[in-house]
View 1 (cartoon, rainbow, N blue to C red):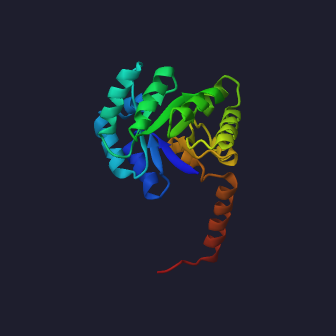
View 2: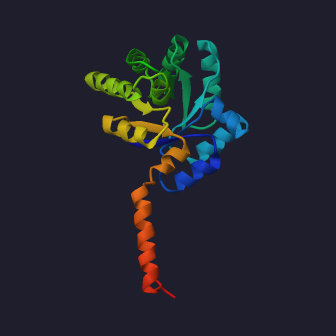
View 3: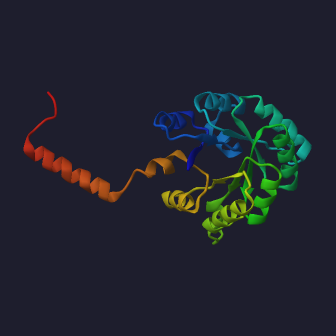
Length: 218
C-alpha cells in the first residue's frame, strides 16, 4: 500500500518523507488555506521534496475552466496530479487531461457508480471519502470493497486512493480490502506507531534496566 500525506504542511511532510513514509501528497483548497501560503509556492516546494504524485486541486466548476486551471497547475512540476471533483464537468476535464498524458485524481467519490465513471474517463486515482460516509452512518469501507471488486472484475488501471481517513483503523481496514493508496493527515500516520502495550512494555524495560545500574557505552 502506498502512503500519501494529506496536508500542505511542508515540515510535517519532510518529517515523514525522511523516514521513507511518503509515496505522494494530496492537497485541497482547505489545506492550502490552512498552510497560509501561496498555492504555487507551497505546491512547488512539496513537489521538489517528494518524488511521487502531488495532487493539486482545481477550483472551477465548469469543464473548460477546470482544464485551464489544471494545465496551469500541471506546469508547477512534472509530478503534479491534477485533482478534479467527481461531477460531469470534472469527468470531462479528466478525459482531456488523461488524453494529454497527465495524472488525474478524481476526488469526492461516494458511490461505486461514480467510481466506474472515473475509471472510464481515464482517472489515475479515484478518491472515495471514507470518513464522510461514516459521518452519515454509512460504512465507508463498504465503498472501498465495492470499488475494489468492480475494478478487479474489469481490469481498470485506476488506483483506489482511500481518502477522508480519520483513524488508524481506517488505514488497516483499507489495506485489508486492497486499496492501492491511502491519504491521511500526518497525525494519523504517526499514530500508527502507538499502542498501550508497547508503552507499558517500554516502561517495564526501562525500570528493570535502571535496577541493573548499568550503562551502554561510556
